[in-house]
Length: 141
Image 1 (cartoon, rainbow, N blue to C red):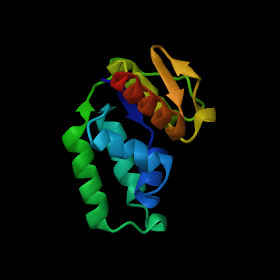
Image 2: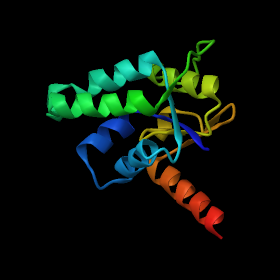
Image 3: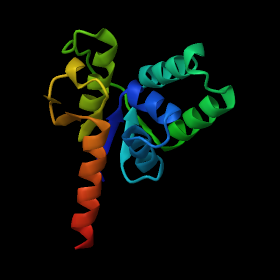
Image 4: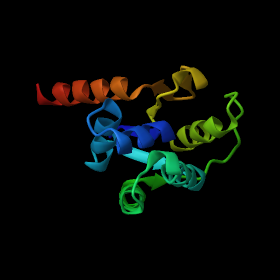
Protein backbone atom coordinates (compact mmCIF):
# COMPACT_ATOMS: atom_id res chain seq x y z
CA UNK A 1 0.00 0.00 0.00
CA UNK A 2 1.15 3.54 -0.72
CA UNK A 3 2.50 5.46 2.27
CA UNK A 4 2.09 9.23 2.50
CA UNK A 5 2.70 12.24 4.69
CA UNK A 6 0.18 15.10 4.38
CA UNK A 7 1.37 18.66 4.83
CA UNK A 8 -0.79 20.85 7.06
CA UNK A 9 -1.94 22.97 4.12
CA UNK A 10 -3.52 19.87 2.57
CA UNK A 11 -5.43 19.09 5.78
CA UNK A 12 -6.64 22.69 6.12
CA UNK A 13 -7.68 22.92 2.46
CA UNK A 14 -9.53 19.61 2.77
CA UNK A 15 -11.40 20.88 5.84
CA UNK A 16 -12.33 24.16 4.17
CA UNK A 17 -13.10 23.05 0.59
CA UNK A 18 -14.78 19.70 0.21
CA UNK A 19 -14.61 19.53 -3.60
CA UNK A 20 -10.89 19.99 -4.20
CA UNK A 21 -8.00 17.63 -4.78
CA UNK A 22 -6.88 18.09 -1.16
CA UNK A 23 -10.25 16.86 0.14
CA UNK A 24 -10.14 13.92 -2.25
CA UNK A 25 -6.60 13.05 -1.13
CA UNK A 26 -7.68 13.11 2.52
CA UNK A 27 -10.79 11.05 1.69
CA UNK A 28 -8.58 8.41 0.06
CA UNK A 29 -6.51 8.24 3.24
CA UNK A 30 -9.59 8.07 5.47
CA UNK A 31 -10.91 5.26 3.24
CA UNK A 32 -7.58 3.47 3.85
CA UNK A 33 -6.53 3.53 0.20
CA UNK A 34 -3.14 4.81 1.42
CA UNK A 35 -1.29 4.66 4.72
CA UNK A 36 -0.82 8.05 6.37
CA UNK A 37 2.21 8.68 8.55
CA UNK A 38 2.58 11.45 11.10
CA UNK A 39 4.49 12.49 14.19
CA UNK A 40 3.32 14.09 17.43
CA UNK A 41 4.70 17.42 16.15
CA UNK A 42 2.76 17.17 12.90
CA UNK A 43 -0.47 16.30 14.70
CA UNK A 44 0.05 19.29 17.02
CA UNK A 45 0.60 21.53 13.98
CA UNK A 46 -2.59 20.23 12.34
CA UNK A 47 -4.53 21.05 15.49
CA UNK A 48 -2.99 24.46 16.02
CA UNK A 49 -3.63 25.58 12.46
CA UNK A 50 -7.14 24.09 12.19
CA UNK A 51 -8.16 25.90 15.38
CA UNK A 52 -7.06 29.33 14.15
CA UNK A 53 -10.04 31.72 14.35
CA UNK A 54 -9.53 32.90 10.76
CA UNK A 55 -10.63 29.49 9.45
CA UNK A 56 -13.90 29.52 11.43
CA UNK A 57 -13.98 25.75 11.74
CA UNK A 58 -16.33 24.52 14.44
CA UNK A 59 -14.51 22.76 17.31
CA UNK A 60 -16.69 19.69 16.70
CA UNK A 61 -15.48 19.51 13.07
CA UNK A 62 -11.83 19.90 14.08
CA UNK A 63 -12.16 17.31 16.87
CA UNK A 64 -13.83 14.85 14.49
CA UNK A 65 -11.22 15.28 11.78
CA UNK A 66 -8.30 14.99 14.20
CA UNK A 67 -9.93 11.95 15.80
CA UNK A 68 -10.24 10.19 12.44
CA UNK A 69 -6.67 11.07 11.50
CA UNK A 70 -5.37 9.79 14.84
CA UNK A 71 -7.40 6.61 14.43
CA UNK A 72 -6.05 5.70 10.99
CA UNK A 73 -2.56 7.23 10.84
CA UNK A 74 0.63 5.43 11.75
CA UNK A 75 2.71 7.42 14.23
CA UNK A 76 6.45 7.48 13.68
CA UNK A 77 9.39 8.91 15.63
CA UNK A 78 12.09 10.41 13.44
CA UNK A 79 15.60 9.40 14.46
CA UNK A 80 17.26 12.57 13.19
CA UNK A 81 16.59 16.23 12.50
CA UNK A 82 16.46 17.48 8.92
CA UNK A 83 17.42 20.95 7.75
CA UNK A 84 16.62 20.77 4.03
CA UNK A 85 13.87 23.40 3.91
CA UNK A 86 14.27 27.12 4.59
CA UNK A 87 10.99 26.83 6.52
CA UNK A 88 11.88 25.04 9.74
CA UNK A 89 8.34 23.72 10.29
CA UNK A 90 8.45 22.02 6.88
CA UNK A 91 11.48 20.00 7.96
CA UNK A 92 9.22 18.08 10.36
CA UNK A 93 7.39 16.65 7.34
CA UNK A 94 10.66 15.59 5.70
CA UNK A 95 11.70 13.93 8.97
CA UNK A 96 8.42 12.02 9.08
CA UNK A 97 8.74 11.01 5.43
CA UNK A 98 12.28 9.75 6.00
CA UNK A 99 11.42 7.87 9.20
CA UNK A 100 8.43 6.17 7.59
CA UNK A 101 9.94 5.68 4.12
CA UNK A 102 6.71 7.20 2.78
CA UNK A 103 6.26 7.06 -0.97
CA UNK A 104 4.86 10.60 -1.14
CA UNK A 105 4.78 13.85 0.79
CA UNK A 106 1.66 15.69 -0.38
CA UNK A 107 1.78 19.48 -0.12
CA UNK A 108 0.32 22.66 -1.52
CA UNK A 109 3.71 24.37 -1.14
CA UNK A 110 6.08 22.36 -3.32
CA UNK A 111 8.45 25.31 -3.57
CA UNK A 112 9.22 24.88 0.16
CA UNK A 113 10.52 21.36 -0.43
CA UNK A 114 13.04 19.57 -2.62
CA UNK A 115 11.49 17.52 -5.46
CA UNK A 116 12.22 14.38 -3.47
CA UNK A 117 13.66 13.39 -0.13
CA UNK A 118 15.41 10.04 0.27
CA UNK A 119 12.78 7.60 -1.09
CA UNK A 120 9.89 10.09 -0.92
CA UNK A 121 8.55 12.10 -3.86
CA UNK A 122 7.12 15.54 -3.09
CA UNK A 123 3.85 16.03 -4.98
CA UNK A 124 0.77 18.22 -5.05
CA UNK A 125 -2.61 16.86 -3.94
CA UNK A 126 -3.74 16.73 -7.57
CA UNK A 127 -0.66 14.71 -8.57
CA UNK A 128 -1.18 12.33 -5.67
CA UNK A 129 -4.84 11.74 -6.55
CA UNK A 130 -3.94 11.11 -10.20
CA UNK A 131 -1.18 8.68 -9.18
CA UNK A 132 -3.53 6.76 -6.89
CA UNK A 133 -6.29 6.62 -9.51
CA UNK A 134 -3.78 5.38 -12.11
CA UNK A 135 -2.56 2.72 -9.67
CA UNK A 136 -6.16 1.59 -9.05
CA UNK A 137 -6.81 1.37 -12.80
CA UNK A 138 -3.65 -0.68 -13.24
CA UNK A 139 -4.86 -3.21 -10.67
CA UNK A 140 -8.25 -3.51 -12.37
CA UNK A 141 -6.90 -4.37 -15.82
